Length: 437
Image 1 (cartoon, helix red, strand yellow):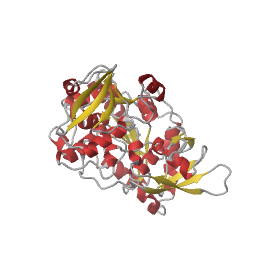
Image 2 (image 1 turned 135 degrees about the horizontal axis):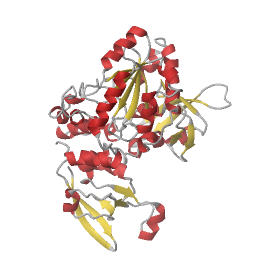
Image 3 (image 1 turned 135 degrees about the vertical axis):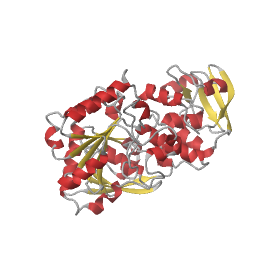
Image 4 (image 1 turned 180 degrees about the vertical axis):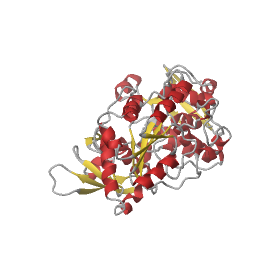
């Protein structure tokens, strides 16, 4: 089941607007970076060799150059602001612009981000991850305070290495079904390990977001269940009820009432020191700890609380299905999941304030079909129109977000299944059928 090019294009348009001259941007990036002395360009192996030689920690920036998301922070990092230069000098710095040759055993991070950073010891041990959805959603966001805190935290971990190696076990990669992205079936036929610098370089590039999509497709093509962690990858801290400060490592700004974090006893102002037994360097590390957390059971969190004489230990009560509380609606990789589960319908849970106007109570399903203009043929052929309100699907009527519905549909159904739905269109109540892909 090969992902149609139109869906990749739509994903790029919807969530990752690109520069007008993509080829020119990539070639300019190469020419600019290779003139400098700080950055090793697109050669991870050379970076590891230099880290072993110098004893410095390794910093690997992964950047989708044509993508405008994260452009602000990328410019600051690549050009080295006055605040970053002395920190970067303590690292071996590598800039990677494509995912073709990534060792997936080592490079496991949020593939839907267009700017990420992984930190290693020269022996390959992962120190931590940095990534920011704040920067992903705002190309003009240039703040590097959180990135700087991550660098400082990594340097502290590196100073204590290898005595602290056991504590880093939870940061290492999980077992992966493929060694590199170009070995995944849906990518192997279209991409090679090396970029085509003599031809159209952008067209030869495996983008990071393609990795998650290709892995999910590989499960689907074999008729196997897609693991929940691949439907809801790298859950944001908000999934467990936490909003973290963007300019700190993992300081709690808000705690959602009745959330898992609230039930555990975490408070505003707390600093998460470790999660799942591993020390944290950023909010992306929190997402990684949640990514590899159990589907149910306690998750240990060590917290530094202002005024406390010692660190506190809490257990987050992860309940069955907790991953489905993650909001995946704005992820590029979700386009493929929508296609599988919902015929590419893009749905939005009707807010409480509008439910009364439509005569829908707060506990009932009410997902409105929203679109930016383009309506896929499958959606049209099924009879759906913009503004339709999905109020029943496969006899399910209880309230759910689009993210929850996607996971539920993929779990409950296989390709080719015909699923009955009920929609409200104005005053009409219509019966329409979805075909699971």
